[in-house]
Length: 86
Image (cartoon, rainbow, N blue to C red; front, side, top):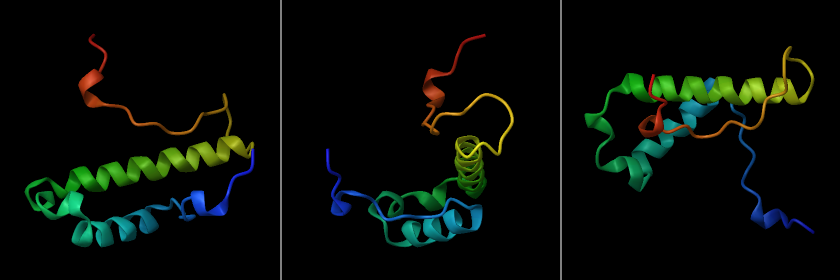
């Protein structure tokens, strides 16, 4: 199977400063954020970006053999609505 470059998304580093810069651009212009991002806690966005950055960093280190422990898979979305009941 041949993968065409036009199908691939643009490469973006996943460092926290880069993710914040991308988010700050998207929240001003993106239709998903234009209506209601001001009503939400800014800490929620900041924490989410920090967690995403850490997850991708751990995945990359695991894939390259620079992280101890079991190999990690790609980060995935985990819904709060489906949290395990204790």
